[in-house]
Length: 165
View 1: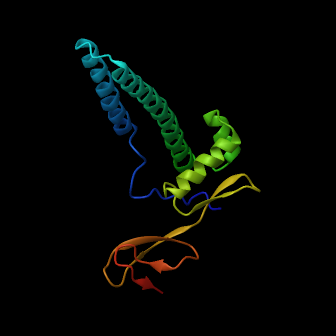
View 2: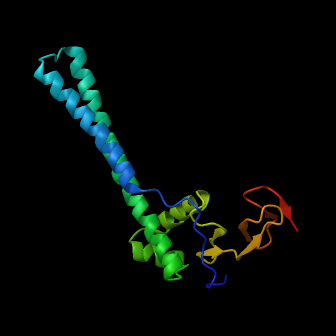
């Protein structure tokens, strides 16, 4: 592993937690508004009571899922900063710094790699480190676009699909 080679962040940034929160707020507000309307019009017959209870349970479930997503997002962001800015590749150090288990770090980094947040990276469980494959840039001879490719990978333009030698 060459520490000077930093992982490449995919063109799509990490998911924005504020968008998740705003969607959850809309759902919860709508659920509360329906319950208040039903109470105001005294339409709490058996069917409306079950429907209202269902909405409240859905809202609570959504809040719990949102909170979990926000915690995961914060860990992803912290991992990325530690890896790219502090050059910390040890999974044990990442676990200690983030106050999570080694298994959580491994699972999180596998997800980040799967979603291309850490391109050209893999987890080496024997050394317990994140390994970053050296990335090189090339200019497509067909369309002129600048592309990144990992060492020992075929040079294929991500814009026009042309394979380079």
